[in-house]
Image (cartoon, rainbow over all chains, first blue to last red; front, side, top):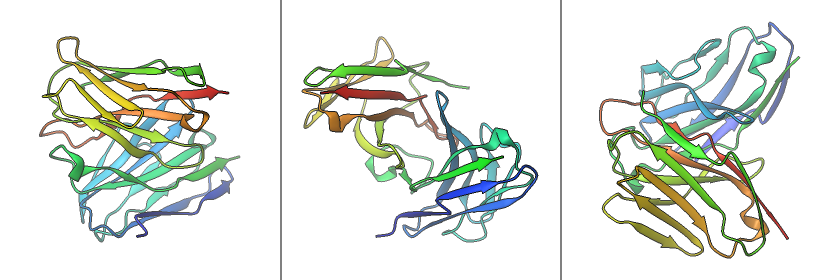
Length: 117
Length: 113
């Protein structure tokens, strides 16, 4: 089982460049999300999607864009990279955002380490 | 917005000790309390979870205890090992109406030999 696959694993960008972090899941999950992880800040929600064609902002959406054209894919776009976007990014998926219990376990990708210089 | 406050931010425990990580929440609009474990260089993964109709759940050396009156749930690791060194997150899954799945701030646990 591939689970949640993120690419690239590592990336160095120059300030002002744009790029897309790719995320794909093969579990037919409706809910997908992007988090960034910074020291002492935990996991902060950037954007999320409850299904194909539906996206919404999380806690820290500025400077990022997302789209959800298929159930499987949820790319994260950095529009004009800034040093403050240096972070580790995690894509995650779950069966839904509603309803508690083991059936709604959140599955994470391995992470993408992004450095903006 | 509802909050989950996790403490401590970091913790160093000698091998064999019992680290305790706490999460406090503001209201009872939850019906599932999972903990996620993240090893360095990896994504978080579900470790153990509890429902509020029980006060304690054990899985191997990991125990969750739940104190409804104090609005707090805790993770204990019995006979801790260096391999338990990781970051631990409690998780807030709101009941209905809010789709922003939010984690606690995380506790970086180091078990020293």
